[in-house]
Image (cartoon, rainbow, N blue to C red; front, side, top):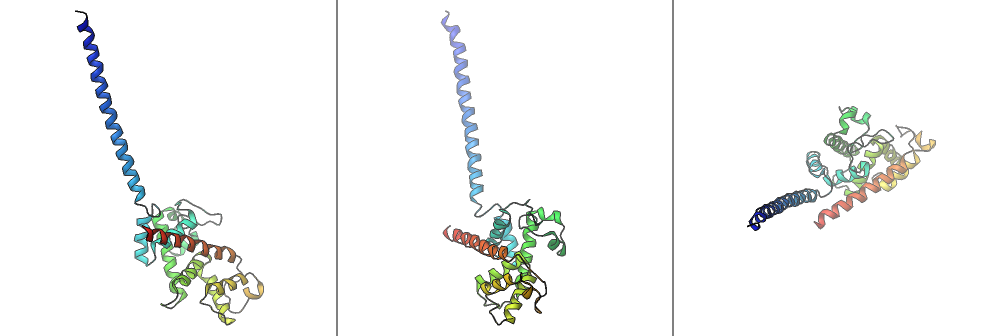
Length: 226
């Protein structure tokens, strides 16, 4: 007679165990499913979480989105809140004075989309101001545009004017880069064709052009391999 009194508690234990296993299985399934979703979301980013934004902005201004991505990587390592020692702000490291001239306030530059838009406008405008022919070598064009982005159009224009004056090839970046370096010397900085005076940042600009181009080539190769 005593045996039946032990069966009831054991039955409850068995039922509770089964329910616990079912509950744990559901939780594990949800966790695995969520992990799969998160992995899928990460895999959608070919370069960075800003892929779609760069694609949209690039399309609007005729700029390769991979170039915009390369600039963001070189400038801020894709940090929307980055601030440089020189005061450049945001994802694309725009100087507030430059943004101001384009109708944007400094605080707006912490918005990744605005930062990308300002950068694309600058690249587009620099390309127009350089007045390079349509059949101009693509990589040479990129070097000049990137140099303008880093040093400012006026500095690159001064270096090109010097190259013209000395009858050198002002359409070759390696030549213009040499004259950009010479702008740190009074003899050249005070030359009659130079409009913006001395410039001491040529080394940084030359390194910047090489760095962005290197990253850009890597990104282009990555997309081709996909």
